[in-house]
Image (cartoon, rainbow, N blue to C red; front, side, top):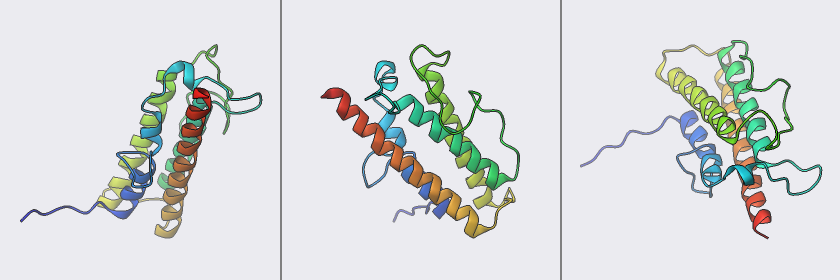
Length: 157
């Protein structure tokens, strides 16, 4: 007889939005797995976001959620500004740096949530608010993963 360890609910929710996979289709990590720099910076139309911008936007909010849950001020972000960042292949930030920024922010949030679930960290937010933040950032990831998938299709057309 095998035993399985159940993943705590908040960690499981985070996994639905950013790897290792979700039942509903590509999570953010899976959606980005095959994105090359040319596609990351390709803009589907004037005034529309590219994949690189979607990724930075999401990473910015993952950082903000971590700050809210921990009660600690957010560290400086990889680029100055807030929320939406205009990036092109001419900007001084590479696609690999953008990807590693998202991976790092997601990992740090997952580690914080795991530490809270293990009882080794006391969060600054009450359980219902924390659950809402985690559910919200997961929905945010899934929404933008869908946009990434759409941009990939548009570029193929």
